[in-house]
Length: 428
Image (cartoon, rainbow, N blue to C red; front, side, top):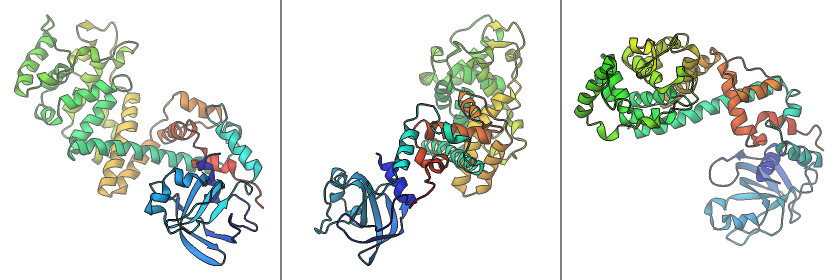
């Protein structure tokens, strides 16, 4: 038994209500179960009940055993003095308020459908990656769609919360925050952390001063990343080395210069080498006067133009310093642009939209995801095997969130799909 299951039973009133009595034998009627509280304090607020003919409005607290009331220190907390009903699985001890009055208690152990208990146990203890796989195909399409949309919005909001934390660290500077956000995404999964460190070691205000000179941008980024340690016979590397030597002294950057061993090349395709990604990042910064304003102002259909990147000639024939590529060096591809739009641009629009109370930006973020093809990964394969094929990034992001933060954690009771499976067909 879990408290989350008891929350579910109480919220949807899935228990026998005929001749409802408290454990003290008082007649009980539930008019309104209340609103689930996700913050500190009693579990449900604004509930309305009638006990022995007297109507009460207040809070509901839920525990597996009534003794949890004192175990959790509620008897010492003023916030729990307005609890009008204590809902428990088992009453193992009477519970009292500070004034000595006994708190009315409803015991659900003998009022819950046994089939419902068994279905819940099978669901959360199922060995498969998606616990409801046996019933997923039979679930109504409208329920699946609504839950995927809800999961997507949650994912966007969680990511926007992370952006807000970064914004606070940057003292409300949206340009600096956007620069760091894009940098982290240019590193993709493997080199995300060193890219973040690079963006913090080289502030955007310095980038802006040299935006018009691509060679200076490359010198700053590659030098701060630790790739320009010594001079070589390569004219391009020598030019960058000289530029960085001057600029690093001008801006006192030496103390925050990274070590090249922080960057990962092993088991990466050459097109994903961090050196090429830094060159692409430099070219993107060079071609955009204001990355933040551009991203916010561009319409959802032209967002790809932002990531039409042409690198400097050297990086059109190299994947890394000093070694010319044997074949063609691909440009910054559509799949890479889509990844950044999904994971950086859409959450940025949500974050800024909420900050400005401009919901058109949130709608634009959702619209962008609806026009980007679905990602392909092992999580989406799981859903595909259950008959749900992801077509757009709207679908894939929702399904990824659903799996990672509901299915894996067995939060079936918080999922509309799980709740629909658990809904009793007939309640007496």
